[in-house]
Amino acid sequence: MRAVIQRVSEASVTVDHQIIGKIEAGLLVLICAMQGDDKAQADYLAKKIAKLRIFQDDAGKMNRSVLDIAGSVLVISQFTLAAETHRGNRPGFSAAASPAEGEALYTYFADQLAAQAVPVQRGSFGADMKVKLLNDGPVTIWMDSAER
Image 1 (cartoon, rainbow, N blue to C red):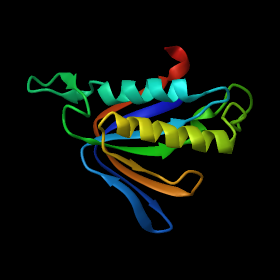
Image 2: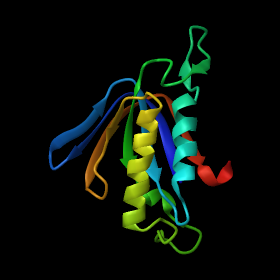
Image 3: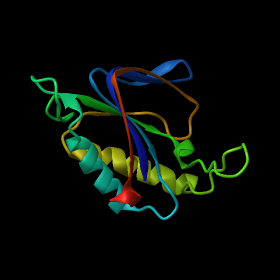
């Protein structure tokens, strides 16, 4: 699985002009299941992201996790993270998991993150979503479970 993690002061997701998920301080996580991924990759990323120390402590160092700051996470499915761009000018997405597998792993990932005692809000898998965020820092980190 691939994830882009952004430290945010606030974030929200809208579908059909309705806000379906909204958080204050915490993380916006864009997540993509790749072909061959399974629950082990989702478990790894959920545990890693819950404990990722990218929030400032009293000394101004990135030393606190979303759990430490009592923050929340907004999880958004993002199949375009599977983009293959090495040939031509139009990205290919054949490396992404099938929609059924992708949705199952997206749901499982969000559930596993919530099981880490992190409040989780979600987007709508496969929907045309509008995501708003105020990136704090900015801090943006890319993770791939295949690189563990």
